[in-house]
Structure formats: structure tokens, C-alpha cells
Length: 179
Image (tube, rainbow, N blue to C red; front, side, top):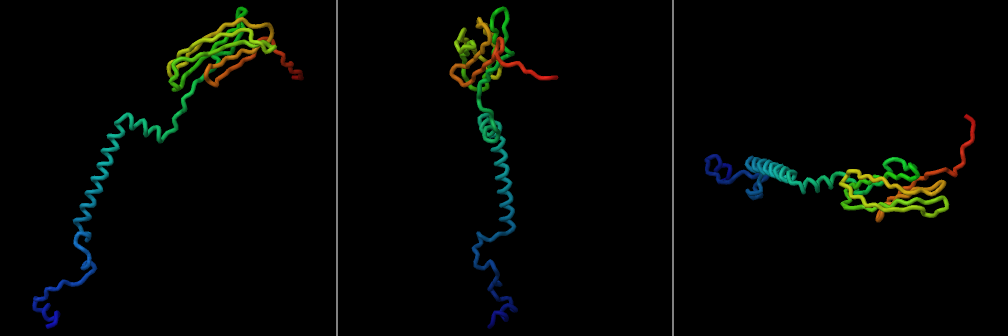
């Protein structure tokens, strides 16, 4: 008998052919596999959130992330005149400040000298400064000045920072003009 006749009698054992006949059952996607994929996705997201929170609560990880995603300033030392050097009571008064911005150097040596108009050093001294991080530390150096114009020099020993300031009578020409 033909399969059509058997089918009418309910004795046909063949299944209708379809696109999944040659695909193993474990590879077939159904409602159950979609639901389990959703559960897996939620589990992965939940795990990622827990790991992110745990990482963010660790100071070392936070610091590394901050260093990775932001521009951090380079450590440096700031040397400057607190105010303009002056001559008071026949002494050159040189107020100097220093700020350590994250270099970690404990002490700094600052050399101050006066140079006469002929290029000779007429007075010199060094002092040691011990700053706190990001807090200015100041000193005032007093030296006997030469006659006439001279230049005040300040150098942070072992570093590239240098300052200079002209004091005394100026040899610069005076401006002549009409108002």
C-alpha cells in the first residue's frame, strides 16, 4: 500500500519532512533555549555590575582607572619671588617662595647671589628649604649690595629653575617723547 492509504488508516509512522530533519536536537533553537539565553545574559550583566562595584571600591583600582582616563599633572617644583626684591637699610632683600607639587623631594637648596654691573659676584649665600606637598614655604635673604645697578640671581640647586631681577640705578635709556 501506498503511504497515503496507510495515513488514512492511522498506521503511517513517517514524520513529515521539514528544515530541521537533518539538524541534531541540541542545535535546534526553541523557546527553552531562548529563555536560557536571556537568563545567561542577565547573569553575565549582573556579574559585570558586581565586579565593577567591587573594583570601584578598591582604592588601588580607582587610582589606576583615574590615571588611565584623566590627564594627571606632572610633578614639578615652583620657585618664585614672593614679592619684588628691594633695597632696605643698605641691604638687598630677596623674598623667595618654593612649592613642591608632588616631586617627593624632601629638602631643597636655594642659592642667592648678587652680580654687579661688571659681572662679578659681590655677595652670595645658600639656604635650605623643607616644603610640605603643595604648600608654599618662604624665606627672605638679605645680602650687602654692590654700588650701582646689580642683578639678583636665585637658583634652585640640582634643578633647572633660576630667577633673576635687576635692582639699583638703571643704565637703560630714558624714553623721550611727547605726551
